[in-house]
Length: 374
Image (tube, rainbow, N blue to C red; front, side):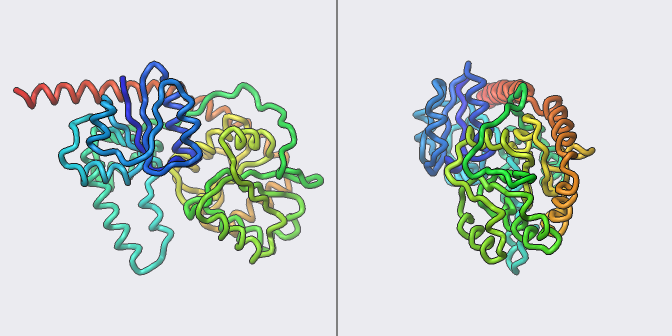
């Protein structure tokens, strides 16, 4: 089988890690991965023997050259280009994975035009996703949204999966992650984008409630992105920069080492699909404190982690104080989360379901092609 994966950017992040695991583990198949914009993640893909990693738009001419059996889109922008700019595109099975519904961003933007933009995006997404052979939702809440709001009948749920880690190794000291005396190290593994909510964490740290505890915890912000400098300035403005460590150039292996070295993973996102970082933390037995956002709450329910009210610095500060008052809870949180992730979010299960989906889509497309010729 020859599969073309299409995304928007070659960046380090959960979506790219998801595609990488598919390509690496389903190595009996041939993969091509295309992104319009180059970046550091491409070299990692290019090192796989069964993968061709390219840069540029996916055009009919490009597809004719690559000759895939199926196209799997992971971003709405190239999907829009494929269906709207190329009406005479080759007739191939199309699968779309929705890595979080980014139309949710308009729930957090309060400008006069936000509601109009949200309405237009919903109309556009609905039309595009109706044209796909299959739409993959990565969480139950996203599945429900796609069925009820968009009226889709071609949706399947395949949870993101993560490779098993036998034990959490004792990590060596990592530069930038020095532990405060009798304190904790918290890792925030996320790109600096509006979605990821770094500003919510910074504002929580500035609240009087947390001020007495600031010397007992350090937050390591691992990632890059367009809002990095703005967040550094926000930390200075709120006089909390001494509690934060901004680490750049963090490849995936480095972030995993940081997870092994930290006491707590914090994910203050405004919205999510089913975050790979949360699953990676869970598989390693890390305790997680996250926003009560779609995806996060599915995984962290029933005391498998701590949730704070979405977009609320006050609620985040309260949960941090509870943890700092009683850090012994972190071990039980991490253990419970690890058991749940191992049971429900294994990489093997995800790959089996995805391979079956590819086969079904190809068979259905072949039947459709035969009927159209009769």
